[in-house]
Image (cartoon, one colour):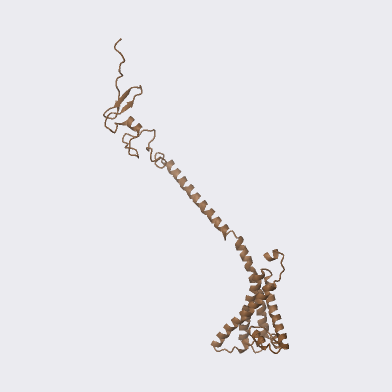
Length: 289
């Protein structure tokens, strides 16, 4: 996707070459595994490892087709993923390059006498290296395996290209990565704010139903009564001492003596034994006139 946007061509030769080498290696490994399993159960694998499609039975053809499909699927996947564009094209060209390599090796084998070992090694990994090898592909088993190779290479290339599309989709998705973390933090902050607002609303409703209960809104250093005057049976304030206004107005001083009380007429008096203010007669300033 990004390669197409950058104006690059559809074909990546290095990706195709890497996919072809991976296909050869995968075929050698898978064929060794399958051959070992078949030999362990007593099945002859001579025709399978020799790529002899003329003498390959139905079971052998199915096994060979499966091995070649997986091998070229891996090769096409590598080509499509490395190219990041035209996955089907680059994956299909993996098979084309494999056939070209086989043809070149067959040509070299025909002209050189010391390359037979090289041809044998390539034949083991599924590369036809002679005209006879290419001729056997025309058989039913050869056609089945060839179709499996084409399908594996093309599907692998498409799968490899799609990996980059999935990566880009996840990178830009708001549900993955840093954007998702930011959204979760915002949601958690909103949830906490809603909980605080709900608690405040419930507290206000409770206070409206019980207006005389001011405990929740009265500071601990102030008496919980209205009008600045405690009731007759009120005890000390929460600080443990009598307030000055309470002492002067409502009772005896802590020392036991009478407490001076301000009189509305400006005269000073003292509290009586019951805590009530006692008036005193004003002093005359002179004798009788």
